[in-house]
Image 1 (cartoon, helix red, strand yellow):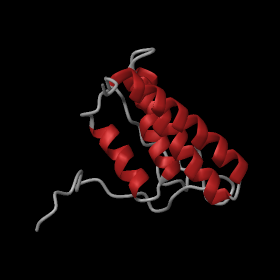
Image 2 (cartoon, one colour):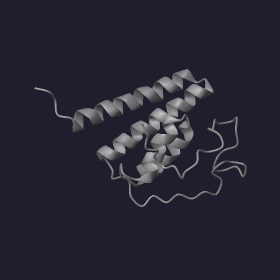
Image 3 (spheres, one colour):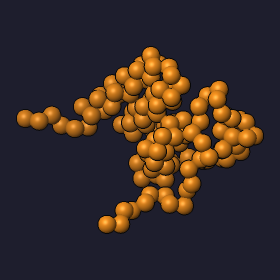
Image 4 (cartoon, one colour):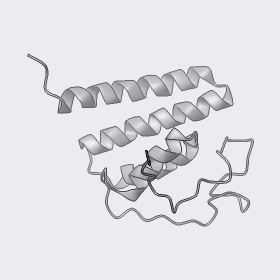
Length: 130
């Protein structure tokens, strides 16, 4: 069976960033995304950047997924379900970074906040069973 590959024309970064251990992707001239400009005109689940963030997270690029979604979060409508979803995913990816850094308390805190947001979102959009 042939599997559909999402965004086959986009390559993964040279490394998954870990603060203090590798060049900062955006601020350091040696960073994998130095001087890369992404403009987010609109935030939606069909956007390439949302899909890219999912793909990055699924392949262990936690900081990079966070960055992909954060740009969308900034342009998403305030108090919208999409904004809550993006915030939950951003926190989940931040937890992944903290786990890799060995900062387990911070990882648990971020994951707990993500879970809370996603539970709240679930209750808001999925009708209760009767």
